[in-house]
Image: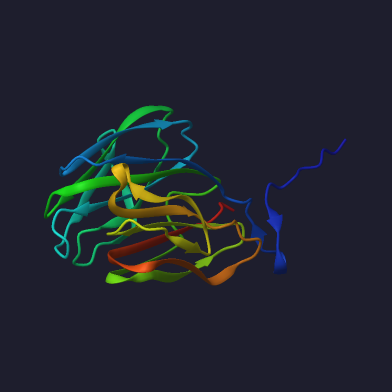
Length: 232
């Protein structure tokens, strides 16, 4: 008796194998508004099968002067930077990943250099059905303005994940993705943050636009986007 074997992947045009959709799971946004250069957050990992994505940002004490993210570690091991934006201003932001971390609770440590940070925030997602390496990335920065915009290529059943920061507290409108958080940092202090994911696309979408905007001009804008493809 023959037993049929079911392929876990769909077959697309011209016989191309299309992987199952990437499955995102937003965890939380960690925040700390105490001045410092190093910030520690407790992170719970549910499964070693997940790709862990973190989007750290902060605001330095001196506007218009460089502040950098020097390292992001989980349980003492450095995470991989997929995309980073800092320019010459005090609101750096990046997307960092890791995978294969056993279930448990660990310390996530974000360290800044060049000046003291007034506050720090880190978005956290789990992704299933992908790898810890982005298939495409984009970033943009500006010292002033009412928003930023970038384009990325998203493969079939993949998604784009973004992070955004500005140096003022105001409502942020997001285009091309859904914000999992969109707020000012702890205590209502003057740093606006947002982060989230696009919908999983049914077919390859090139030049997909992720945008952020706000009514009033803000200082020190930063936008980072990373695309995660399914594993075929």
